[in-house]
Length: 101
Image (cartoon, rainbow, N blue to C red; front, side, top):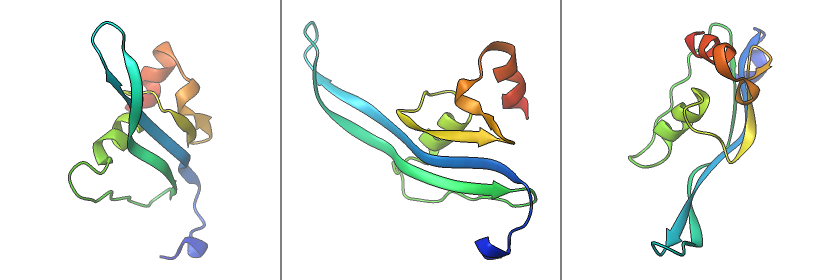
């Protein structure tokens, strides 16, 4: 089904999701020398009744994307809303409830 044909409720709305891991040198005086761009600007909408498959070669960021959406890793930037609720702004018991859903 084409995106224009989708009429269901948006269940998951992800916009410009980014996760960069810093590269450093040195043990005592750590110096930032760059970043590994694990997820870089991912956007999608998942509507009620749809299934989304994420495919790609090893090391392309599939698992990191899943960890971000399950709130196991903090994003560098971007937003994700589950049924209209900002998933990155939720803490404590509300976060555990949201993960179950």
